[in-house]
Image (cartoon, rainbow, N blue to C red; front, top):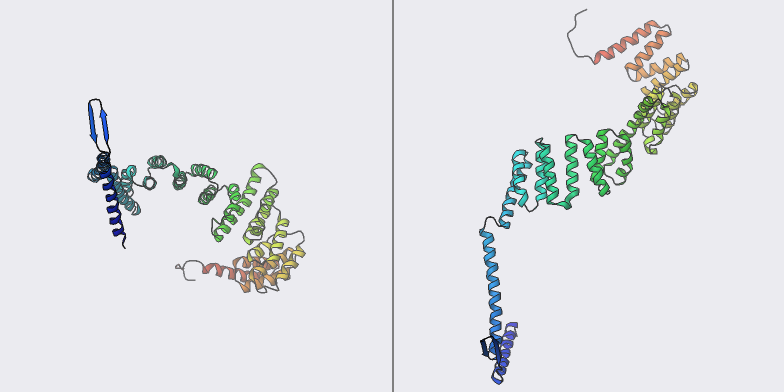
Length: 410
C-alpha cells in the first residue's frame, strides 16, 4: 500500500472522529469585551482560529514575494548594486591584466565600495596607482583596503612592503616587514622579502642572522641559498677589512673573526677560501693565507687556489714548494700549477727549476702572465735573445685579441 493511500485513510479517519466528537458534544464558547460578545461552539471557534493562522501565513508569504520582486526591479537595491559592482570590477581586473593602469584604477575604485570582495579591488587599484607613479593614491587605497577588510592585515602588509620595495623605499619596507614578522613570525614570504631588503641595503650582518632561518624553512632553492650565503660571507670578509681600517683596529683579527663565524661547509668552499686569503694577503698576513690555502688544497684541488698559492709567501718557502710539487703527480700538465711552481721555485732562488716549470706551463697553455714571468726570468739570467723571443710570443698572443684594422705595409 502506497504512502498516499495511507495518508488519505488517515485524513478520513481523523475527519470521522472529529465529526463524531462535534455531533456528540459541540461545546460552548463565549468571548465578551465591554458591550461586545461572541457566542459559538468550541469547534467553530477552533476553526476560526485555524483560519486566522492560515491568513497570517499567507500575508507573510505575500510580503516576501513583493520584497523580492522589488529588489529585482529596484536598481538601487543592495543586490543590484553588488551585481553591477562585480561586473565593473571584472572589467577593471581585465584592464589591470592588460596594463591599462588609468582605466583599471578608475573602474576598480568605482566598484570597490559595493563589490563582493572589496579587498581585491583596493589591492589591485593600489598596484595600478603604483604603476602610474601616484604613490599618495596608492597609500590611500591601501588604507581603504584595511578599512574594508581589517582581518586581511597580513595580505595588505605584504602588498605594502612589495610596493615600497618597488619604489626603492627600502627603509619603509623594512619597517613594514618588521611589524609583520613581529605579529606573524612564521610568515615565510615576509622572511623572504626581508632578506631581499637587507640584500639591497647591503646590511650583511642582519642578513647573515636570517640565513639559518632561510635554510631551515627552505625559503630559497638550494642553489639560491648557497649563492646568497657565499655573497653574504664574502661581503662580510671584505667589510671586516674596511671596518678595521676605519676604526684603526687590527685588520687581521676582524677578518679572522668573520671567517670563524662562517659555517664549516662555507669555509670549505674554494671561492670563500679565496676571498678570505685575498683579504689576509691585502693586510700583509701572507703566512696565514698560505696555511689556509694549503689546508684547502690538500682537501680538494682547485686551480684558483693553486694560482693564489703561488703568489703568497709562507713561513717556509722550501716546504711550500715541496707541498705544491706533490700535487704535480695528479696534475702533471696543469698550466696553472706549473706557473705556481715556477714562482715558488723563484722564491727559493732555484732559477733552473723555475725556468723549467715556466716553460712547461707556457707550452701547456700560452698565457700572457706565464709569458711575462718567463721573459723576466730569462732576461735576468742573461739570456736576452730567449727573453725577446718569449716577448714576441706574448705580443702575438695579445695581437690575436685585437680588432682587424688596416695597417701600413712594412
